[in-house]
Length: 497
Image (cartoon, rainbow, N blue to C red):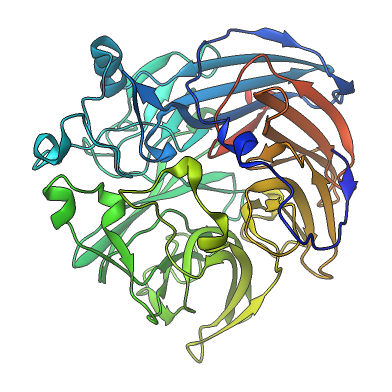
């Protein structure tokens, strides 16, 4: 597990059994377990908490989820202070989790295809959504929010991780209203830091509700801006990007046929299908405190492809530039497929591309930034909405070819130069979190934190890297086996956590 800039490998550098061994139930909940570095030393000035969310239960009563995204959410907290670290983890005790724990069986259908026991007849016309709170976790004021984009967030205690219950954010949300699992934190383009987020109501016409909340001090959680906008067509939106003046969405060219879901044959997400050869559309919604407040949204044609995640966006004169991870098609797992046996050569790879949206002419030009399979990319927190020189992301070990994510890469967005830390051949990484050093002025002054699955010991490890050089500072073997996760966030100790 070393820093490298390897040549493109001729064949994959992993064993499928190592990758698949992560898919299991988390068997215990730990509280403030002290950790020591197995290699190196945890930096003394790394002070704060790394929160991670992801599926922690993938099986009940002998029945496995059809897709890991249907697994119940579990929060992991790694607290750093003065060169030491402590680990806690808790399942999010949603109403459905409590019901199914008591029953010892699945009682709800999963969005990504997990059925209730009993076949199609038992699932037909049961359209209830199980809020699994498994996608992201962020701190807002005195509460930690476990997010799942199809419904309301769950509030947790930031220290104990105990579930407080569903949160409607002091009446901002209606019960069951969609609330994005991918907020963006504005570093202060309009004064203090804000959490900018959205909810979408999809249909023949789709409505996006754009919300901005104070993210600092005693006002944290206060709603500062709120607007709704309607667009033609069905919208599948997981992520978006912000600039000081715009919220930028990409409406993928995708259709939804609900009939197989209604009849109990498929999960709702399995009813999504890309339109071959069709192009999506960028929606640029003016932010209420920006220079274009009150104007109508701008609509521009997007390149072909499907996007889950954006890296960042910024303004360049009359243009908006947005970097996104494009797939040739919507990647999905069909009803008859086993996710543990997925053939990576047969599913589309995610590749980083830049689109320049010229608002004056209405034209869009696209440029490929990297040929390496990637996901879960981020820029330094202070550069969100501004042009950034550096980005960090999870990548495949091979420089070309679609494989599981096994390395963390720093990309110089100006020169194209890369620096890579690899967990191959038996390690599999998740989303990296870039943490600025206190008082840093350089964009890459800080650390990159990454949880990864160590197939050699069938457990999870934490790596701390120098963000500038990508050299390993510390590796910590965790006393916990955590399945491949989704999103996470960093809360500095100065924020009171």
